[in-house]
Image (cartoon, rainbow, N blue to C red; front, side, top):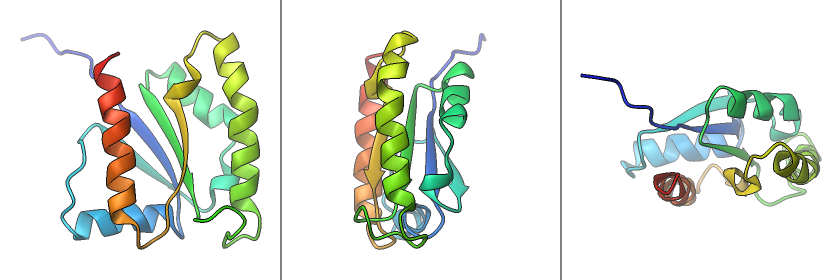
Length: 131
């Protein structure tokens, strides 16, 4: 039986909010697609664009950068604003590289928003089905 390639969703989640939101989704038994791989970062503002590009180079179908909710209310003062700035600058560069910019998503998810995390991952997985 030959292995079939199934693109993954790489979710880069800040420790204080979105990672806790993903954990809350899990403990609340909210199902989300299994093709997500969650990577905990201390802050979304620390995610360098090279990490995102590396994920795409390695075959990621989609990448999620997720930080504290709402923007401007970050545990590291302005980390989520920095993440927003970096992602917005990366979208046009992705297009230049032939990568659909919609494959990079930015989301603000607090520790109590397990259902929001579930919904974002479900939407991203649905978009992967068309790839």
